[in-house]
Image (cartoon, rainbow, N blue to C red; front, side):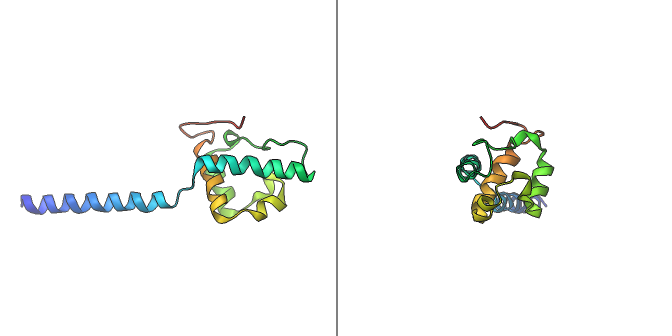
Length: 114
């Protein structure tokens, strides 16, 4: 009986450990996302589409659920700079999403672009 319980516990441990690894692979790089997010607006400003070189929205202007909804539906009109957003790769979008989601208003570490 003890051996069965031990085997079940070991199996559960490996199941949770592998699930964590799989989920970690789907996360982007928050630091790269912050850089890319800012670069989009610098490029947009250089093109003359917006007046500010700084991002129009801080990460803390939305909740995590709101950022998730925006990126799931790929509704990037909120950011303006359509041309720049269309040029971004899926990895760049994942990095930006990770940055914005990680520092949203309801996250453990809300932050603002500086």
